[in-house]
Image (cartoon, rainbow, N blue to C red; front, side, top):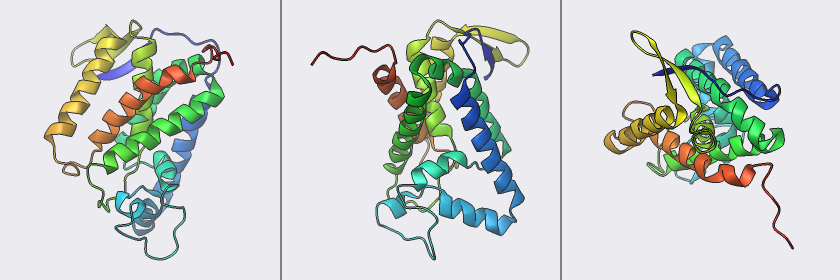
Length: 222
């Protein structure tokens, strides 16, 4: 189930969404430019390791970022082409509308907060894990959760095995979330190298928090 586009136009250029995609692209190209050993070292030093954050392990040598900071640097690294391309496709299709609705500055904060919540949700499945977590998946899942709440009736064109199909975002994203939730419950953490709990946590965070980021939200009277 691969989304191609939605029928939900925006009012202007999604500057932040484009910047995030370019930043992830730059980081991915940088990863590819490194020799295999240096690439693995960069993943260790910039990826998020729950065991380091919670004090069960330490990074040998000089750390490039703090354990908490690695939650955010990890969002710009990826484990391979399809990991990178899939995240950027979803961010491009769904991120522009969420950015348009909440505003550029708030979208930056929203994206990073969702990514942080997602990383912590994954960490809770194994606090002693020393496997570096990388990828924008958690933050992008937050964007999907926000889109699910804000635009449930928007149509999304999907690439199917024999033909394209247009379905409501409520259906497409609902099925996506159900699949991630099922995998997070049925597959042992770390068994397949995919942070399903991060996807679930990010989606829920996005769905819950987006209302607080809406720019048309009225201030409470003092």
